Image 1 (spheres, one colour):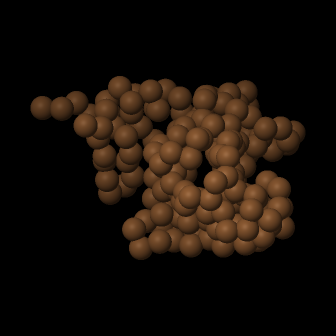
Image 2 (cartoon, one colour):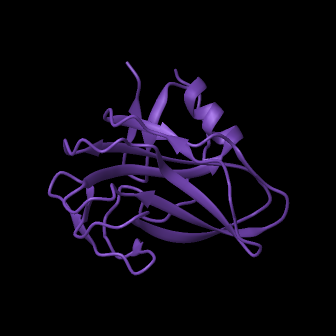
Length: 166
C-alpha cells in the first residue's frame, strides 16, 4: 500500500488547456497555439529583444517555485533564462531558471516572498522571427511541496494525472 501525499499546484490550467491565460508581453508579436498533443506553442513573429508571454498570480508569503516541461524547435538560439518570475509592487526580477534547449522539465530555484504578493510568471521565446518554444505541465508550488513531490518520485500531476519517475 502506498502512502498519500498532498501537494498543491497554484497555477490554474497547468496542462495547459487554453492559450487565454498567457498574455503577450511588451507589445511583442507572438503567436500562442495549443497543439493537439497538449503543448502551448509560442512562436516569435518578429525580431525583437525579450519576447515573452506572461500570467499573473497572487501568492501568499513563502518560498515558491515555477516550473514547466520545455521543448523547442531547432532555431540555433542560445537559450537562457526561459522561466522568469517578476515580483510586482515593487517591481524586481526574482531567481529565473536556466535552460540549455534540451527537452525536459526545468524549475526555478526557490523564490522567497516575505509578504503576500502578486508575481508575473514569464515564458521567454527566442528573439528572432520564427523562434519557437513549447511548454506544458506547468507548476507553481511551494518549495516544500516541490521537495515532497520529488521525494515521492512524482514528476507531474494535475486534477486528472499523476506521472511518476521510472
